[in-house]
Image (cartoon, rainbow over all chains, first blue to last red; front, top):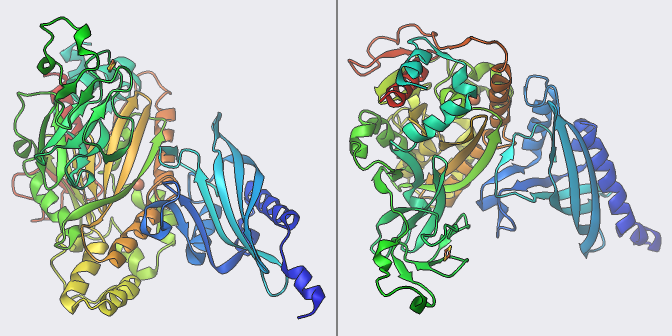
Length: 166
Length: 418
Ligand code: FES
Ligand SMILES: [Fe+2]
């Protein structure tokens, strides 16, 4: 492997944050089709009902999506036939407080905080969450989400219906 | 409001809109209904071993469901007998003693007051046995734990009556292993609790509100969920209970075990075979994993709804909390329970493909109910049930009939005017 290629293989924090902000922007704009392309084949999108279980697959989650479920979910939200997402709530989110927890030649793992405000029918709700990302570099050099875990601050408590993606 | 007033608010085919929005009526409901009947608090698998507990509610009152040293289930008011602090704020866990955080009174899992710190500060005639945590009357059926503040009402089994047959059928989802809770989704909607009570026996909304859920299924499964087209029915089971059968083929999960395994469960069936389960077990587990074809509504706060328990909790006149409890096989194959979890996540919970649309619909009902001075909620839908399906003597209508809602409101009227 040439030195130049090795250089591009590592993922810097700056690249990762740029990627995450671009993702957040897609989600706030309900632009779900390009969002679906941000994922690896085996990527998992998880919103748990408990903090840090030993294995998310073995417990009940709010969302535990593989590729098929993500595509079905985006289709549902964009269909216009789901009354909780048509009309959609408006959302504004920021992601910050990044901490790199692991990194290697072709991947980076981060913790972060997400602050999201939702507005619909005259009420505003606030959904803060602890985030975990695993981002990998595809052979063509682009970054992809391999895992995204959104642990709401009140994950184990009640929510209201959520008609958009976190 | 007088008994007479309550009687006039519920007619055979409609109820007055004030039942959704009048705070005085709500307060009376909490007294006359939630403090006078059997209220679901937990499933036995939530407190599986001695000294396990789970916090819950009876109406507006917080309780702790405990399993004591003798393996007896207790339902205790979550309130210290000294100066009222709540003694437990955990959702569930294990505890051999509950110590009040304020001055340290400690209680056994059966409620007995065990110890009082610095006891010398009390007069000599202070008698600990006068101050146990308040214990409610508790009875169980098919693993469902119910509690009541009323010591004079009929035994639980009599209250459930013909609903028991449907609970027996529902628990076949344990595939012979027994049923166990696997986790819960909780969500709230800004609306009255009876809007949710109605919904469990409302097949009419299903193809409309849940169109996007249906669109997410393969063709074979979509046919299974054609709930209006399979000759189902709604049956009044007395005491406000009702059953709505949407998929008659899935009433008895021990029937039709020779039928071909649906495509969507082919992978699960193979996984079970690979684990060494024989063909009979594989078929039984797969059929159980798919869930039941009916909703059993138990007045006032719980339903055995196809593949999960649906529990409602009135918070205020215009706010209700719902819990969707995922269930699976107690000690059954892990692959089967994993599949149950994924199926539950698909429809249920705050981001399921079904629940948020239900919640939005109920919110819209509450918002709409603020318009109009003297308007009624119409419950007059329904034609005859298909011949021979319902128990002789039971009032029954077609699958999209509002028979179950009428049954619940007649019970409401009986209790509010008793
Ligand atoms: S309030 Fe519980 S010990 Fe005082
Ligand atoms: Fe529904």
